[in-house]
Image (cartoon, rainbow, N blue to C red; front, top):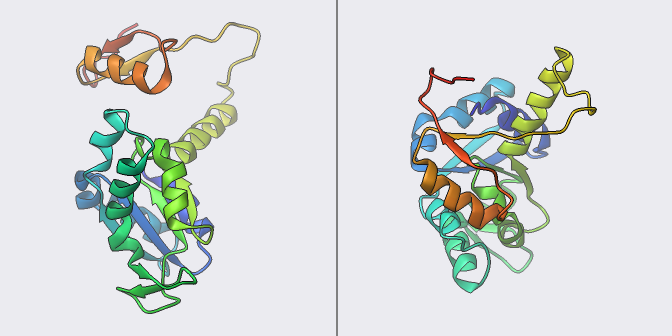
Amino acid sequence: MSSRPGASAAALATRNRRVGVIATPATIRSHAYFNAIKDENPAVEVYEHATPDLVPMVEAGELSGPSAEATVAASLAALLGERDADGESIFPRPPGATIDTLLLGCTHYPLLSPIIAGIVGEGVAIVDSATATASALAELLSVNGLEGSGDEPVTHRQLTTGDAGRFGTLAGRLFGTDFPDVESVELGVLAG
């Protein structure tokens, strides 16, 4: 998945030019979002933070409750720091130097949006990179005349480069039993 649409949305959303990015350790190590945000606006300060505990929690179906809230709070603590009674950061950055935008840099994280929103508070805009990417794709399809006509029934194909059975089980748990069958593919070998 491209980091560009989410980075662009975050660079546009920030009012104080301070954006936090949460993602998997591999994504953070790649600095893909950092570089993409800086390409959009070099003046934006980007604070990247790996959140390795969130993906396993989502995949286990733990999307609410005290344990999920505690895990998300602990995962975001480094970005948010300690806060005073008004919600201003007092550690690690000085008051008034907090992020005002949080980019969710993993497709799993929007499932935790209600918890994340409750923890970061109303003063922090949450940007979902998956939604931004889907919007960019819809625009690309439209510009190139490739969008559906609406006259034909919609079909979905679910593809994974991983274990199709495991992905299907996870998707069914997260999205319900109407989730279509999952096919396993190799990159560069998509058939039919």
